[in-house]
Length: 136
Image 1 (cartoon, one colour):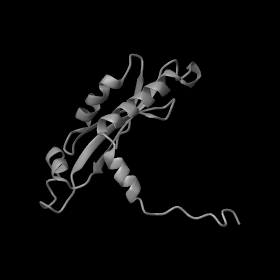
Image 2 (tube, one colour):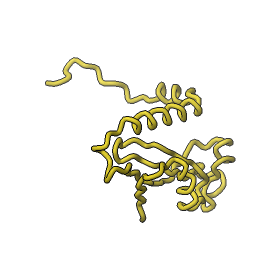
Image 3 (cartoon, one colour):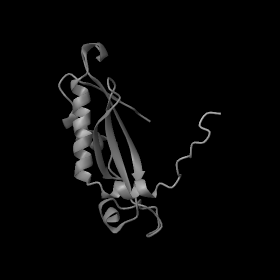
Image 4 (cartoon, one colour):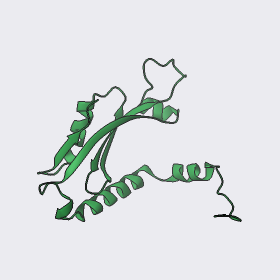
């Protein structure tokens, strides 16, 4: 039997969560950017479409811990009773088809229109890029 005698990892994720909270947000942003740029620089011509870099734009909503700071920055949805919900943010992401990596991320309040969110991502596009969007 595969893995016999091997202790299964704990399902308690508290150590991971505690470590993640201690990571400065600015550090995570720098790592995100450096990795994305590094991957994009290594893309060879064979992975381009008609010599163009293809990128995909997508968005979603995320809920976050119910802290005073989060409520102030990202107020909960107006249909939620006060104190009965979590702060909600809208995120927009650009992915590279060639690398599969997320190369840009923006976060805004929940009621931000998708077009406004997309416009905040324009600065991450290069001349000649092809941008695909997903419509629902």
